[in-house]
Length: 113
Length: 111
Image (tube, rainbow over all chains, first blue to last red; front, side, top):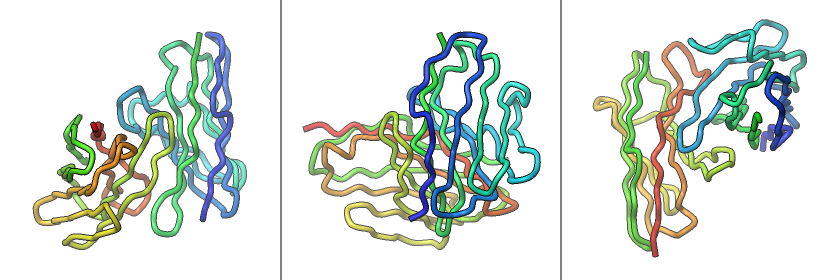
């Protein structure tokens, strides 16, 4: 089946630094990738939709300059959390449309200290 | 816009049956998904309903009523490993594209 590989699975960074999260589609081409964040005991909140070769579409209330999304190829989408702060600590997960539904990456647990 | 409602938490006993309800409001309808998610893991697909009725898949079944904007996930013969969050999700009107999730229902299965 279609697999999305997400890295890193866990990252701890200092306040003020930037962190990049990668999602790769391993056996299919993903022209669109969706990025979600999830706080403890909460559901997945859609942050943005990345589109290969064009600008990402951000959901209302999501800061474009803080959460930089790049989708430079049909198999790679990246989310960069810039100038991270403790309140950015969360579980970030990517997803792609596939035949019959959606496939998800394994998620990245970001902790900002 | 859309609105998806689910109970926040439910508890059940091992071996029992539990029904998790989901109501939704969308200006268009492109089907409804149910996902299971264990803490710290990716959601896993359970079911997709686009037509009214009940679809059974092993111990899990999903029901949809489009006229009522209502779905439920039925879990039979509960096992301890079924303790997880169950997420109801719909693609918004305008296209089968991004997926919007409900708040999720945390199910705790007790011995």
